[in-house]
Length: 300
Ligand code: SF4
Image (cartoon, rainbow, N blue to C red; front, side):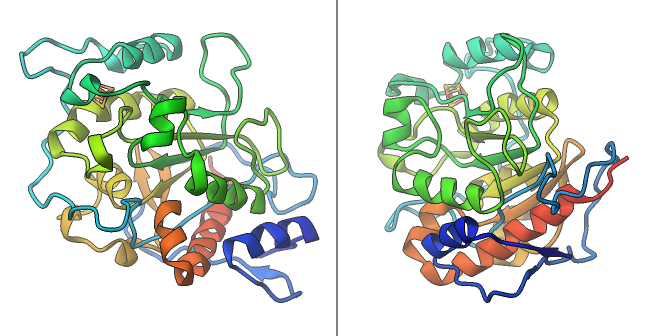
């Protein structure tokens, strides 16, 4: 499978540090790994210039933690729970509508991250076609947690890492706020909806308490592909499908298709990591191509 890149996309890739020959790009076929991709309706050939759907982004071994951040937790993350420490239930998250889910996150006090946040960061992407209903999307990007800029603006992936993500998305025909783009529609969110103080690593209890929101987002959005960016996103999404996930280096998890709630998942590096590790941008591009080829397959 090949992807013809016009000058604009080549320029986007150049900004990522990926310089490709004039020949068509060969897309990576997913390894025959431990994956189970659920059946979906057939999609048009996303590689055709007029295609309405495409897929994007991928990466591996790095998390989005700032340089010098503490090491990730090694203790097993408890299963997702929807209870506050006091035992007060979050409510039936699994049954919430899109608008009710947004309201629940905005008022959530299920973990201590609520105490210092300026904004919750629910997610952003393709606009809702019907007010209060989940937008139709093809791709879902899942990062780790809001940082300082995200906390200020209430939007995921802003700042320098966000600009790199936007360029990565544009390279495969996606735009974060577009109702329609050559590559399809995209939604961007994080595992945690509130910023950990000082951009420290998420704690297992915080991930466990917040994860039901992400699970419900996936259930309502039903994307064709999820791209997990960075170590904590990968650990959260693949906990049910990869044994001893906390001990697995991100680089070893790349190149295969996993599943989360029946949606194919591709693993890739976090853009913040790529800003510090330029040599891995080529791997991120390969992961994008894997996501692209996966989303383009007939699913159904
Ligand atoms: S991080 Fe998640 S669980 Fe914790 S307060 Fe924010 S929305 Fe609630």
